[in-house]
Length: 143
Image (cartoon, rainbow, N blue to C red; front, side):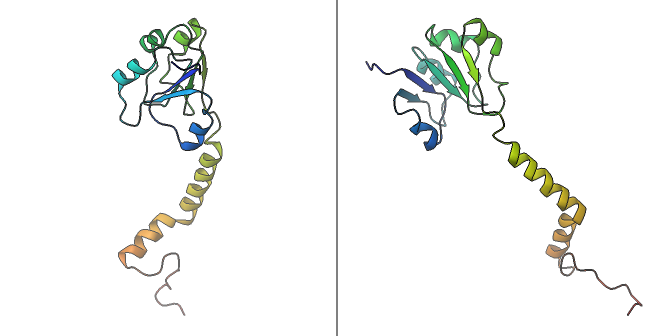
């Protein structure tokens, strides 16, 4: 048995996240992990790292045990976590706020430009062979 604190990764972390856990005993379920696998892994865990596909409910919390300190969600939200059940047990819940803020803003600006410039329609016309996209076609009878 290891003296290191046990961290259960419900599914899989990116390598950059795994490196940060070098001082812990890490148990990972992998991408194919299901609820039964999670319930087998969590006993004795100090922390559970979940993603939005992994429900963290009273059964998981009870199975983990009273030493559980934190449930970290590898996502912006936390709809998959029973926050009230964690609070009742004194378990801290974390997530990754603002991680997609810039990307969302950039996408919104890009879509705004695309709509204003008719990029989608121009691209569709170009693919259909109706001429160069975005280049005005002269009106008949004008010079």
